[in-house]
Image 1 (cartoon, rainbow, N blue to C red):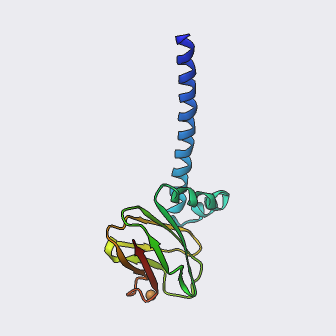
Image 2: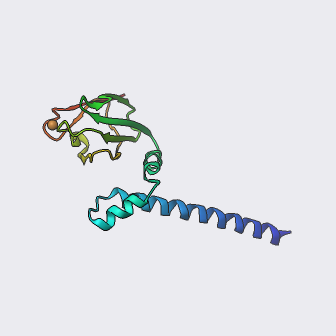
Image 3: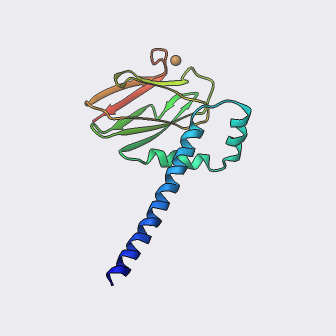
Length: 151
Ligand SMILES: [Cu+2]
């Protein structure tokens, strides 16, 4: 009896471990794809990876608040976003236009300056520490930008 129970437990654990290993591999592959790695070999690998778009939401779902944003010819959309103090915020930003100078997102108070490649979701994560309006925007004095309202 005891022996059977132990066997069942260990096989269940093996299955779980195999599942976690698979997820870890998927995560590592997603990170490798996210890193800019120009060159003909890298490009052909990227083209072969069919599931790339599915990986971004998984990464963003780690915890806290997730906000999908776009950079269009009107600027950041939505420009004003309300977030909660003390909870991690994940901004998933996709720049869909080359018509503006907003090719980076800068949030001075949190030391964030992240490039926004065209048509590629980029994840920016931080935890707002104080309530109030937090300005963000492009790298040139936030000429194009918006406000994160921390409550
Ligand atoms: Cu600008």
